[in-house]
Length: 162
Ligand code: SF4
Image 1 (cartoon, rainbow, N blue to C red):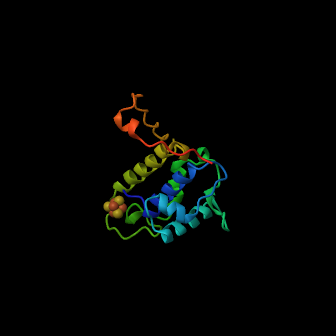
Image 2: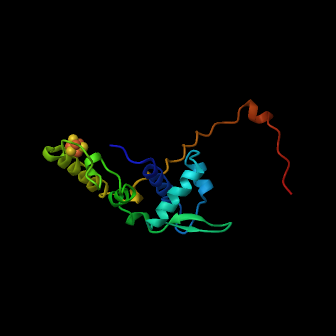
């Protein structure tokens, strides 16, 4: 099983936005840059989809951008993934038209796959967007204070500021 690339990107965008304090917007350009140079065009489409789902709100203008439309603790991952993957079929017989697999009349795999997908979503639904990002690692500890060596004694004193 593999999620759509657009679902993957949407989750990255939401996780990044969840790290912003409430009310803060990020431009699509900033998101593209901060998420490792993702395509801006692709992210524009992803943001539009998220806005249509009511997950983000967009603000126009120089100080505008994208922000979460609801607190990250209220966004359940199972429901989110299900909505982002709506219309996709695990295999052919899951299509709305039933597909054309000749095994369909006697196949029991379809039920197993359906159950596995439901279990996948149930498991994700136990968590929210707020739980997706670990706390930032602690700042590196300061090295122990040492007596100034010869380099330090030779260091030029900076002129006093204005
Ligand atoms: S083998 Fe079974 S699960 Fe796979 S497409 Fe055919 S009917 Fe569906």
